[in-house]
Length: 215
Image 1 (tube, one colour):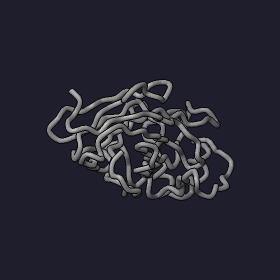
Image 2: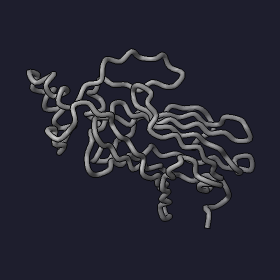
Image 3: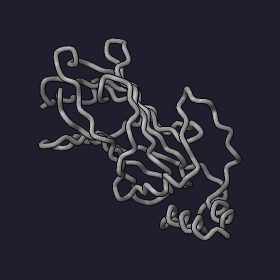
């Protein structure tokens, strides 16, 4: 969704629940599907993460801040992170938010939503992280119209520790294209992947751009 030319969106100022310093200090980076694969070391548990740098005071404090209220003693030695994208919200000035629940199948039926041409909007995702730290979570989005790719965007969301409450992440503001050629039906594929290309959600859906918002 968004503009009609390829672009890479800058990392926005996240909401209070997402710590930008944690993402910037991490040594974990996401890779695109077309990128060269990174050779990763063996997976280690949260306890091992803390034990590994116990003599480095600043790094230890940063990891404890990242883990927040997680009870480390209750975490299993090695457990894969469980990342669920709970909802997508479309925020546009001077109108009610459009809240879309993520279907279990990852493939919304029919046209999922309608955007007004020439309108400013932000996407907001609600993300639940359980079990373990997810490192280098990244959003990618591809959009087609009449079989031609018109948008290709990606954004690094960051590194997140497990917590009871969902995180929220607001994407940078975008503007829908306008004019006769911009109106119509679009198909899109959205993915959420981590730094070793593990995909937590793939959404395949269609949406419309019309003269006005859907009633």
